[in-house]
Amino acid sequence: MDIVKGNMGWIEVVVGPMFSGKSEELIRRLRRAEIARQRVQIFKPSIDSRYAANEIVSHNGLGIPSDNVTKASEIIEKMQPRTEVVGIDEAQFLGDEVVDVCTKLANLGKRVIVAGLDTDFRGRPFEPMPRLLAIAEEITKLLAICVRCGNPAVHTQRLVESEELIVVGAGSAYEARCRRCFEPNPALAAREAGPLLLRNRAANAGGK
Ligand SMILES: [Zn+2]
Image 1 (spheres, protein in one colour):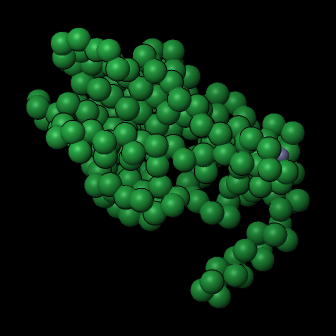
Image 2 (tube, protein in one colour):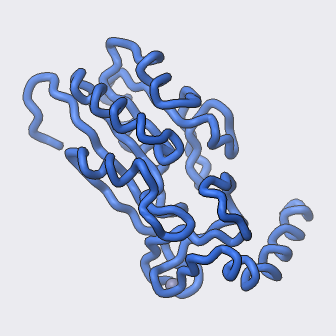
């Protein structure tokens, strides 16, 4: 998005599975905007409480202060008129409303950068990300590395037996897998991963 005239807004979407560096990429773009002295506001759903309450944290520990919201409309309520760049992390937890919120902000002339999971634990499109991809000016799809075979990984493998759409947690509950190693049925994946998970928990309890 190099050639933009006037104060036109737009929407950038960063998608991919867990462990693909989405939050890291979001933070990188927001930091660069801050370095250019642009006014930045950052939001994330309060459902994602991993690591820190009031900042976006990627798995590698980079953090940037953020505002927690319970629903997308709060982003509009908390928006300061002079803000030029808006970052939204974990947008898949904010529901369909986030699509209208992003559209509204871009129409107001703001650069909107949204990150989120594009597929769920069964490999299905994770609403509302597909709709955001459709209306975005720019799309970045990141891949992780399959922990099984080292190929590019497009899927988030759930390793615990649950059919809930949202089971928030990092580390041992999920891993990145390629399309060949991905097991869409979490019950089968959990059975297979059982001994490994127990080993991981024991290691974590031991403070390692
Ligand atoms: Zn694989």
